[in-house]
Image (cartoon, rainbow, N blue to C red; front, side, top):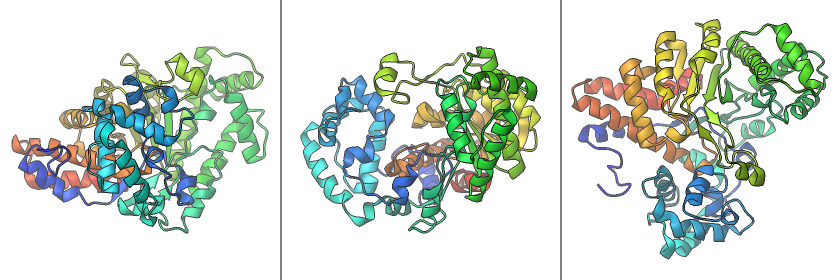
Length: 455
């Protein structure tokens, strides 16, 4: 088996047969971080660095580990120099999924099948410049070429969604939907929370003196998102606080924070719990999917946060985080009336969440292996484990979680190859019949997310 050949990640003839059944299915990508404005404007990529690394903290972290300076990652150096620095150490990334993903992107999207290294960095750059300038490499055309049937971006409640509406009259009409992501309204312990609440007031032309007015504003924006074809909310939290908190207690905390007074950690937990439940009620009323991405401990490296700001590669996970205790009250409150998808950052939490999804039945589901887990190893271990304690058919399906349009196809390809290989091994071990295996891989690759999210 050669690097990224037709048998890539497929260790048996059975796996090959299963992959052939799903290889060309359309992509349903129910969670990503697309730049909707760039997509609506149908921009071209100026160069290979912009397409592959300018927004990708996975790449930055790998290159930092190999000694590439910050000036050549997030600094002001020309993109050409950044690409050359990346190519010079790219051989050192072998074994890391980033090595595979970027080579997949180059092969599948650009038709460049050379191995990135110092000796060919200039030639790949030059070839890619000519290819990226072609009309078929504009962003909307890339989405069509990758077979993306539906994709859901990640959007703040104050977003006017003008670019989503523009996309309705484009080369990809109806493909892109917004997702309601109210993290900044919820996380009252963040220093910028008060400023954000002021911006939300401006968005709805109101003034919040009572918590009910904040909830009403979120309901207004929630309704607006629904009018613009939204089908889900998403919540990025370190700990999924879902405790049941009286409105009066949450309102007292809200007024205190608005007055600029410091809050205790317990007060922050109470307020965030109240808010998470409030949005869950909105989702339940509309039949939306309620997604929770949990476990990211943000910006642990002080120097990165100080010099570059948040979300620049200083995020980790903590296996000691208790997920069950804070989340279970919310799951009980909405038992049987809210579709929930749970994503974990640390692999140790896969077991807890798989047990929860088993206990709560069809409406609570485990999401795709996320972030540090979205590799062959992480995906395979998740599939193997949930198949032993829950129904694989209830996995929510693959999402790219990507900021790079170019990578949607390769991310879904890796998932589908991993799925085919994992299920193929079960067939070869006599654990399932081939006919049911074919049905399973088709369902998880396409039908499951389409049905769950109503796409």
